[in-house]
Each structure stands twice: as structure tokens, then as C-alpha cells.
Amino acid sequence: MWKRDRKLKGHEIQALLLECHRAVEESAQAALSMISQPESENSLTYPPGELLNGKEIAALRKLSDDPILQSALRKIMKDVAAYPLFHLFALLDGVGDPQGTTDWSGARLFRSGDEQSPMLHDEFFGSFRAWEENRHLKNPDDTRRIQ
Image (cartoon, rainbow, N blue to C red; front, side, top):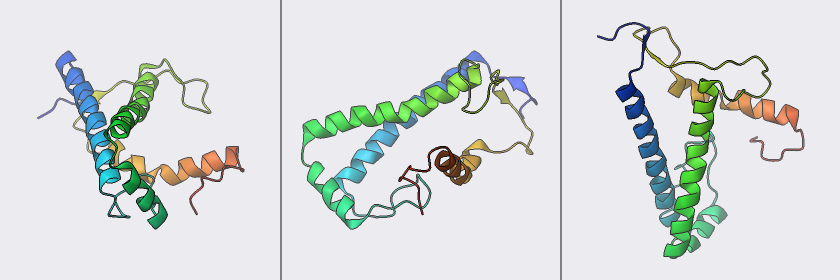
């Protein structure tokens, strides 16, 4: 049983960070697998509801035979996957501010047995539409908006 609102210990923080690195590597490998075998239009999880079309799948198939290109893509994908984690940690540490805020002082992670707390991994995908709408309101010419 977890103690309520107990600060994370050093080894727990280390375990969390190591898991983030593992997830970055795993996501790059999964993305390369999608490139080598882009059979399914439904293999994307983000953004919610976005699919690869037939032309995109055909183009990805052309990339799958080049090992140098795959190596370069793996490096780029790991960099792209790591940035949001680094940014999140900077926000939690209070050394960055969420856009639109000026009084952010950071946050701390605690182990908690409070079942009423929101589950951030669930809230993440649910918050996509709000982010998308906010992005569009700030830049109405942004054509990446999902219809």
C-alpha cells in the first residue's frame, strides 16, 4: 500500500526516467516498423482519428529498403519523441512556462493512493481537441487542422 502524497525517492525517479528513455526507443522502433510495413491505415494513435491514406502508405513503402535512411529516421524519431518529455519535465521543474501562463511555478510528482486524481495518460488523448482548437484560434491559417 502506498503512502498518500509521499515524495518520490531517488530510485523511483530514476526508474521513471529510465522508462521514459525505453519508451522513446520503443516508439522509434515502432515507427520504423510502420515505415517498413505500412499495411494498416489504422496504426496511428496520435493525433486521435488521424489515418494514413493510400498515397502515404505507398510513399512509406519506398523508404523501407534503405538502411542508411532508416538509421537517420531512427535518430530523428528518437529526438522528436524525447522533446515532449524533456519539455514536460522542464514544466514540472518550473524552469519553463506553459504557453499562455505567466505565473507557473512548476509541480512535483508524488506517489499517491488518491483514486480521485485524474489519470494523465487518459487525459492526454482526451485533451487533443482542445489543444487543436487553441492552436487554430491562435493561427487561423494553420491548415493542419483535422476536420
